[in-house]
Image (cartoon, rainbow over all chains, first blue to last red):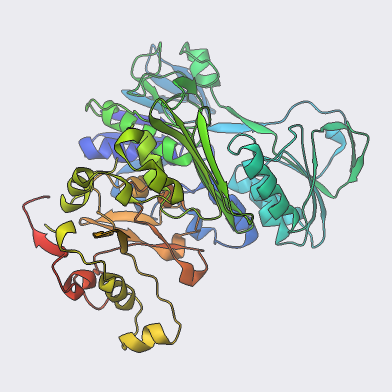
Length: 415
Length: 149
C-alpha cells in the first residue's frame, strides 16, 4: 500500500499517526511546498515575539519521519491530482502514484482587492514561518505598523510586534474585535486590554486607498505606516480537489470517514475541509489545529483499512493576547448565563434543548475542558447541578454514578 | 498496569494529597519550608468538596489522550501509559485545558501561567510512585492493578 499525503502540518501528521496505528509497513510519502520539518503554524507569533526558538517550533520530534518510516518531498508543489490514473503531478512534471491520497493543503491568506495596495512595499501576510521571518527582517524598533484585520491572526501578530516597540494601529470592517469567537461584552473587555498595551483600534472601517506609506480609511482618517500586516481572513486551498472533480462548497466536502465526495481513494483533512459542527448542525470550516489533527488521524485509519468516523467536531479556541486568556467552544444561540466580576474575568454559558451548547471563558479559564465535554458528550443539563457549574467547572456537579464511572473507574476515557 | 483509583466514600477533604503532590514535584527537601517560605508549589491533584462529599481528581491518563492530540506544539506526549509534558515546548496556550474532560490540566501559576503542568504519576520526580496516594491517610486514592490496560 502506498499512501501519498499533500501537506505537512497538523492534518498530515495526524494522517501519518493514524495510518501507522494500523499499517506499520505501507509506504508513506509526504509532499510539502515548504522546506521545513513539520512545525506548528500557530507558533509563528511566539517565534516572532522571541518566546520559542525555531527548533522548538517543530510539531513532532526530529526523528518523527524516520520513526514512522515516512519519505518526505519538501519544497515540492503538487499541481494536479489525476484520480483516474491515481497519481499526482508535481511541479517539475513528474507523476507520483498513490493507492490512497490525503489532501491536507490547509488554507491561504485572503487578501481582498484594495486600491493602491501594489504601491506598498512592506506588506505581509502572517500564516507561515517564512511570513514571520519576512516580518522580523522588516520590523524595526518603533516601526509604525498597520494591521488590517482584528481577528486571531492580526491580533497575534500585534502581540508579537509589541515586543519590537511597534506603534500599531489595527483596523477592521467589523465594529468589534474577534467577532468570530467572542460576544460583544468579551470583545469589549479584550479590546480594552489590548489598548492598554498601546495598540490603537479603528473599527467599522476599511482601507479606501493605500499609498506607499499611508492609508486613507473609509471613515476619512489617514494612517501612516512603515509596514502593513494583511490579516483579513483565510481561504481553504481547494483547487486541487475541485479540478479533479471532487466536491467543494466553501471547503472540501468529505464524509465522516474524511473521504472526499466524488473521488475514490482520496481523503482530505484540516483547514481545507468542512466539518459538521455538532452545536449547530451546520457544515463549516473549522480551521483549528486540534480539529485538523483529529480529522487526519481518523482519515489515516480509514486509509489503512480501519473504519473510523470523525464525529463531535465543533468550534473551539484556546488563545491569549497580551496575557489575557480566552477559551471558547460551541455556539452562542440559546439561553445565556453571563458573569463578570468587573475586572477582566468574563464567563458566558449558553444552553439550549437541555444541553450546554457553548461557552466563553475569559481571564479565569481553569478546568474549561469540563464544559467542553458537557457539550461534546451531550450531557443533559437537568441531570447535573447547573447552578454549581455556573460558579466554576467542577465534577461535583455531576452524579455520583458519573463520577464513579469516570474516576473510580481509573482509566479515563476522554476522546 | 497500575492506575490511580478514587474512593469517594473514604475522602475526608483534608487536602493532604495536594500538599504531597506539590511537595513531591517541587524538588525541595523540607515540606514545611517548601510551603512556609512562600514558594507556592502547584499541586497537580485537586480536591473538590461540597457538604460532606469530597474527592480528589488528577489526570486519568486517558487511553485516547485528547489533550495530547489537541496540543498545538507537541509538548504533550503519551508514553507507556503516562501523559507527559515537556514544558520547554509549552507556550501556555491552554488548548489542553480546553480539551481535558476532567479539568486536570493545571495552569502553572508558579511560572505565571506561561506553561501548564499535570500529574505524571510521579514517574519523573524523585518519588517514583504517586506521592498523593502514599500520603493519603485514608485510602481515598489508591494506586493499584485492576487488570486494565
